[in-house]
Each structure stands twice: as structure tokens, then as C-alpha cells.
Length: 522
Image (cartoon, helix red, strand yellow):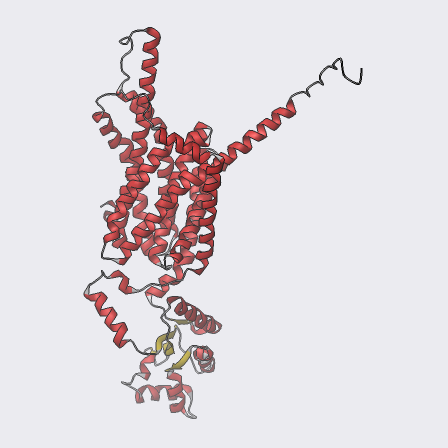
């Protein structure tokens, strides 16, 4: 409502932003509840310890609910602030830097949703949580042994090796598939399955689209004069030598045949009158004085169904026409082809800017350049694997997939951000993973459940969005609970060996043992 009230537009992908916000909101709620439960556990153990020392169970009352909520939010607030700021900044930077309207609108709504969700989480949700807390007593040990065993097994040497090996395999698949990803988009994808629009498109393609040519038009923003007519003809014929060129309806050919030996200006006026009402004269636009101010050059090229090939051919023709800039020659592109041509470079540029923004936010909120570099590496890893995964699943590079690619900056890095934040406070990979594993797993599963209904949509685009979001969440979970803890565990071992070596170098050398009675040196 705020977005539309501020003049924003609504399109189909806006509905996807609602599902995304639902997943992100539940993630933050799990983190807060988990932290509050930990605070309640600590308060219960503290009361038991004090009561045992005083031997009086009634000597110490329960902690206030506000104190426990405050202690939990004091720990969880930093985590959800980190992920919310990085997500909102990432989407906001993408909305401000991209020139693709659909991507700009989606990222703007996503940034607004993340910001509003964070405000509601730390105000309304926390207030409701305090009202619903009837007691602060909790079992002394809430965390299951399975979580601790999983964290210990994963950070052990065999667990590290398995996690890093799986990460390398996924990266290899991503690197192999990303360069092979083709650009493709069809307007029929917007129509629901079984609709009349989809059926009409199928009938048209099967029975009526049998032409072996592709109609393309080139334009000039300025017309020729008597002095520049020869140069104009050269520019109009610039694309004739292209291998896919078939024919052209050049008004100059008919004009030259009509002109004969007459002057350009006199013949042009007579030609305009003689050809009045015919198609050929409509390819030249005239001003009030009868001078040509703009022209159109219809061409026929060899047909190709690949959007990537079409863009490649249009670019080749553009490069030919650029040599005749004096007339402002350009070749027409459909809105779909224009958007497809800009999609990949614009998306990569936006992702690069967003990654830089996330890095800066990580430095400010985590206080460690190394931790921010870790988040930056996670973003690059998730994006590369996701692009490769699109190829292996038979999908294409287009406006929709590149919009969802920006989600990887937010959804793909959240789990790793939680682990990195916990690692800086707990000091070891095993302890950090054991503390945040439960909310991360619950948040990831809840996000998957949030997007699951979209998998049954009649729209191919919505199903594609659901598939890619599931890929991002699953990949983010794997990196956050397996690959990043494995790397941090390796860093722990390296740091431990370095500390031991430094300590050994600082200690004085051990004196030799005193000679014994049987020592041959006596």
C-alpha cells in the first residue's frame, strides 16, 4: 500500500515479494524466540544455582519478563539488524542503480518490506511475546543433544572435508554451467497454462508462423540532402553484406529509378507526388518545405528463433550503421529484445554494487573486515552456483531469472551472517553453529514452506520464481550450516597452531637433563 501510494507500480512479481517477506519475517521471529528461550534458560539456571547455595528455594524470585525479553533481544537484535540492514541495503542499492523497470520496482518493494518487517519484529512482535509469556521458567537444558552432536561432527576433520568437498563440487558445476546459460524469453510465458492466450500462441507457432524470414527495420533520425545523398545511400546499404541479410525495401532504389538525370531536389518533389498513396513513399518523412527529415528501411533477415541470436544479429547491424552517424542510423528492437540485451550486464552491475554495499554494512556491523569478506565471498559463491544451476535445470537468462538472482544477495547470505556473528562472540565454530543452528534451520524450512504454494501456480513465471527461491534458500542453508562453519573450523585450527608456535618461540629452551651414572661422558 505504501509503495503504490508513493506512485510505485504493481506487477506480477510484487506478489512474490509478499511470499519473500513472509519467509524473512518468520526467520527473524525464530531468532528472537530462540534468543529469549536461551535467556530464560540462563535465568532458570542462575536461580537454581543461587537457591542451592542458600538452601532456600524461596530466597530468590523469578526474573522479570522484561529483563529476560531484554536480554534475549540484546543478543538477537544484533543478528536480525545485521541481516535486515544488509538485505534492505542490497535491495535498495539495486533499485537505485538498475535501469530495468521490473527489477527496480521489485527491489524497491523488497527493500521496503524488509525495513518494515524489522521494525515490526523489534516492536510489535516483541511486545506480543512479552504479553504471552506467562512464566519465565524453562527447562535447564533446552537444546537437544542432536544439535550439539551435529555441530561437533560437522566441525570435525571428516565433517569439514565432506562439507568443503561438496562446496567445491557445487562451485565446479556452477562455473561449468554459468557461461553456457542462454538468453531466452517468450511472451507466452506470462499466460497461465491452459489459457486461451497460451493456446492461441501454440496454434500460431504450429500452423501460421512458417515464414523463413524475420522482418527488421532500420531508421535514420535525419534525412539526406542533395550534398549528402550519396553518403546516405552508403549508410542505407551498410547491412546488405551481412550473412543473414535477405532483402530490403529501400526507398532510394525506387527514387533513383524515377530520378534519372534530374537534380535531387526537383526529382524528390515529383517523386513524392507520383508515389503518393503507395507504400514506398511512406518510408520517407517530409517536413513542410518538402525536405526529408527521417527515413525507414524495412529489411528481411534469415529467421532465427533464438533471442540470443536475434540480439547478436541486431548488434552486428548496429555496428555497421554506427559508421554513418551523421544521419542517426539505428536498428529497431522490440521491447523484449531491448530488455533482454540489457538484462545480464545490468544485473551483474547491480549485483556488484549490492555486494559492495553488503560488504560495507558487514564492516560497520560486524567490526571485522575478515567477516565482511566472508559474506562477500558467500554472495559470489551463491550467485555463481545459482547461475550454473539454471543451466543444468534447463532454464534461461531473462528478466525474471535475473530479478530472482538479486534475492540471492539477501536470502543466500542470511544464514552465513548469523553464523559469522555468533562466531565473533563465541570464539569457535562448533559453539557458534550449535547456538544458531536451530533458528537457522527453522527459518530456512519456514521460507521453503512459504514459497511452496507458488510451485502449484498455473503461471510458469511464478513456478520459476518458486524454484529459484527454493534453490537460493537451500543453497544458503548449506553454505551457512556446512561450508562456512567448516571454513571457520579450519581457521580455528590454523590460529591454534600459530598460537602454539608463538608460545613455543617465546619460552626459553629446555635445559638438557643432568648426566646419569652410566652416561658415557662421565
